[in-house]
Amino acid sequence: MNHLIGLNIEDAKEELNKKGIAYIVVNNNHNVDGDIYLVTNVTQLEDKTMVLTIGSFIFNLKD
Image 1 (cartoon, rainbow, N blue to C red):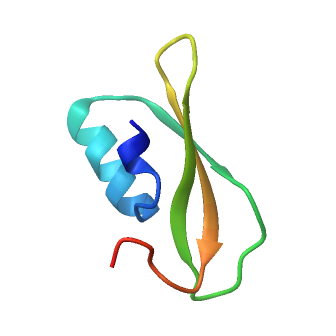
Image 2 (tube, helix red, strand yellow):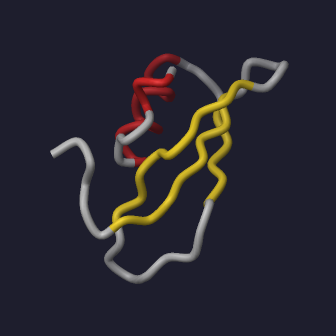
């Protein structure tokens, strides 16, 4: 699931929802209105739930 790193959080959530994978989103920092939320880390819990750590950026890494 490392391919999710750098994706916009909405795109990552959509992919996990389509695959039926449970997830938790953890915000890694404070944000400013208008920032883009990107996935900065992905880990898997013992129950197969994915933990998506997000950060806020003023740009999109995948563009």
